[in-house]
Length: 97
Image (cartoon, rainbow, N blue to C red; front, top):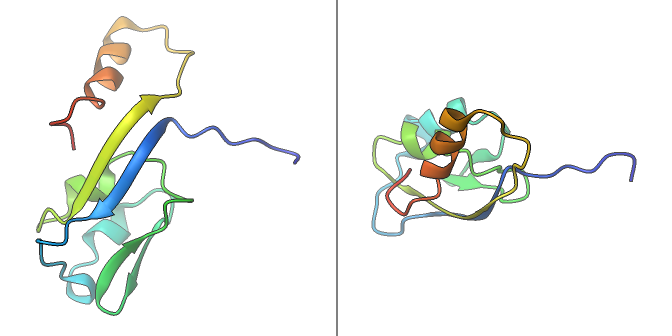
């Protein structure tokens, strides 16, 4: 109870069941994750939603496009720059990855 962590986004992240994760031979998503939310289990990437902040780094790094992110809400309310606000808001679009 000493610290409260507010994630920048709310939403969901999951693996596309139709895509073929290369897991042990790739590691791109695991290597790029700033939160250590990705691990390789049974030769497939697995994402811990409790550690993930929905930043999208893993999704962008995945050459097989296995990772799907759906952001539903932005929890940032201290943005003062109009250009930064536009860029963060763009992450909410359905086409953003």
